[in-house]
Length: 203
Image 1 (cartoon, helix red, strand yellow):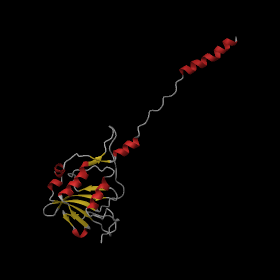
Image 2 (cartoon, rainbow, N blue to C red):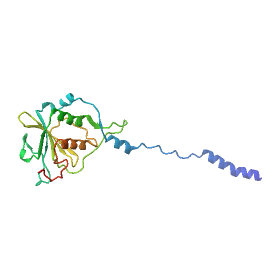
Image 3 (cartoon, rainbow, N blue to C red):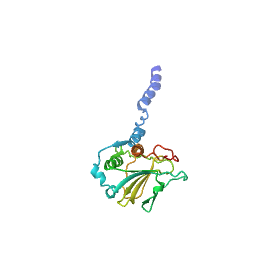
Image 4 (tube, one colour):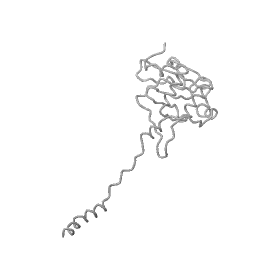
């Protein structure tokens, strides 16, 4: 009788334990933050030669390329001093005409430095924009009569850029691109907007 009672109590427990299934472990999640952060990093690749980059608009139609700085201490928001294709020199703080080597260095930064490739399905997105657009630097594309054909207007402080035309070939603004551009301007003697405060002027 005791054996029968023991079997009646023991066997259901054995059967229950055999059929019981533990819930499946959650699938391992890919390190999204790591890949997304990597996708925003800049990477230099020799995508275009010097000659190829010189053929990009507006470089191919330009007589000279100039870097400028401008800063109006009386204004809360700077505007590029170009009116009807004429550069107002009274509002220009600094100006530098680029050599061929200088143009090649600039286009190398613009078009050979871009997003680091990531795994398929992971977008290469980096949004550098932050503060209000208050530019103090620009790249000017001039004709032989010193008229401004096109320009790239830059705010290093807020990481924003403005193109004068949709025809200008765009650049990938990966994470370090604005710092590279800022160093490029500074190396050519442009201090306003690169190392000086917003309302500080060069003596």
